[in-house]
Length: 173
Image 1 (cartoon, one colour):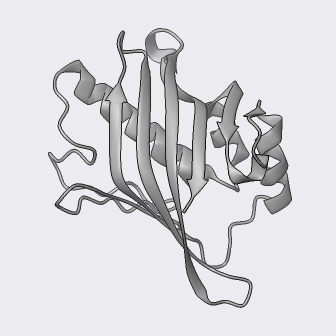
Image 2 (image 1 turned 45 degrees about the vertical axis):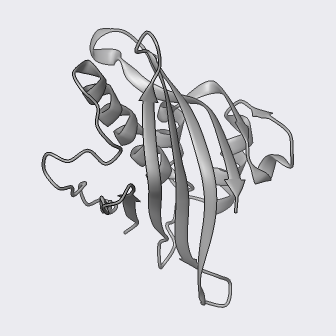
Image 3 (image 1 turned 120 degrees about the vertical axis):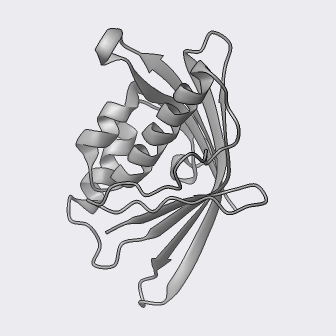
């Protein structure tokens, strides 16, 4: 089971995500702040896409691939200062870790999450600080912290419409 929570603002707002447990949330509360009308639905969709994407790392390539654009770009520590382009860069790490989840899965918390639906309503930016609690090689608990920004684009038409990540930037703290 992987645990996943969102926290932000002055009041703690969190979700626990387990594999395969369903999301648990406080009814009627947004995890990322107020959004009105059609934007509220889009904010919830981007939030769900982000959560599913992060849950898929690093063991569920099929899900990750459907939630990312084939030409995704990113700046992250693994890219050693370069802008990595395309899914093959990320596939390497999924192949490296294989499809077997860790015996003690990490716990992920997103703090101060914010989602902005951009002009036209077909793109969005999500920012957050990500805390990952896990065990190191010696079995001692450690927490990794990073600031992340994800850019999403709504692709497809009708029932096939979905939010996909087209760019992200992850900076360890």
